[in-house]
Length: 75
Image (cartoon, rainbow, N blue to C red; front, side):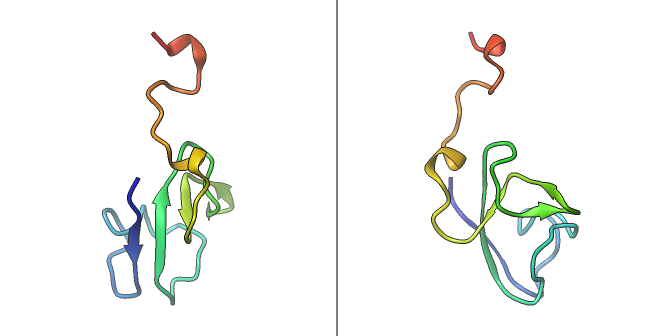
């Protein structure tokens, strides 16, 4: 997955950032990656998200799954 970039002055909505409720420092630029469900290092109103802020996210967090994490849903 490719990283996204948000900086002060950018809109607080997609495609720049998910929404304005992310718990991070809004006064600095962020390079972030979408991750697998719940594997992010950023919270949103205190709850886990699927956003990794910063460089070098874990490979397993950003590798696209071809099957949902619930095994009975796999073909």
